[in-house]
Amino acid sequence: MTETDALRASRARVVERIAAAARRAGRDPADVTLVAVGKTVPAARLQAAVEAGLDVLGENRVQEAEAKTALVHGARWHLVGTLQSNKARRAVELFDVIESVDSTGLARRIDRLAGELRPGTRFAVFLQVNVDEDPAKAGFETDAVAAAVPEILSLEHIDVRGLMTVGRLAASPEQARATFRGLRSMGERLRAANPGLGGELSMGMSDDFEVAVEEGATVVRIGQALFGHRHQH
Image 1 (cartoon, rainbow, N blue to C red):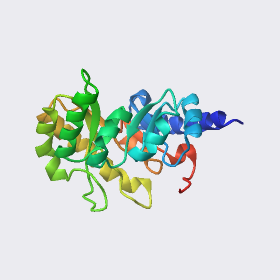
Image 2 (tube, one colour):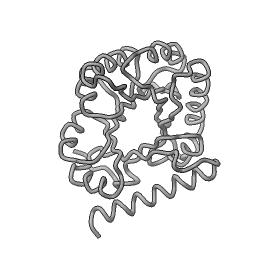
Image 3 (cartoon, rainbow, N blue to C red):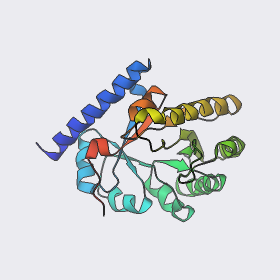
Image 4 (cartoon, helix red, strand yellow):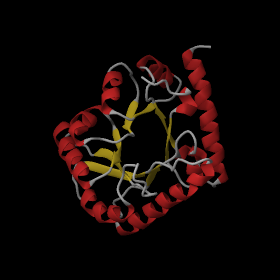
């Protein structure tokens, strides 16, 4: 079996699990985008992934993406890890979507850079929310995001597609449900007050994506379930 065949089979298994979770929630599986997270996965394997139908790729770090994007063709790229403001210019150049906007200042910086580097378009972003108020996680605090949204939506060069969160580290996927339900509820409240906010919800990774889909995820970020255990550098 070739690398592409193996990844095609992995993709089929994950897509079926997404579809089953969507059906349980009365949702259309086509409304869920699968982002294949390639952290530590070499470029050649990511090219095989694209050929296997995994054409939306996610990276956690700008530096790692920089080494891969020139070598992998036919993909759209999402930044799913924390973005330091000094890497924002390179991120806007490399990525199609930044899912990890966690401050008004970073949103303003991306807006300015998008206007400069991608004139005539609006750059897609998600606002990352620390739903569990976990000090180890990045993201807007839950009480700060409502105040930030109107200003961010007023920015000319970014398109706020929706919200993103990272589920809690838990012994079972079911324990992450409250986090995902919390993000969905927050999105509903924020959109009621700010109709310009997109309705996307990026939530769920390899350990808990089925619960996330049941709770309304429109984007899931999957690494290990597609590529196997990570090899540390």
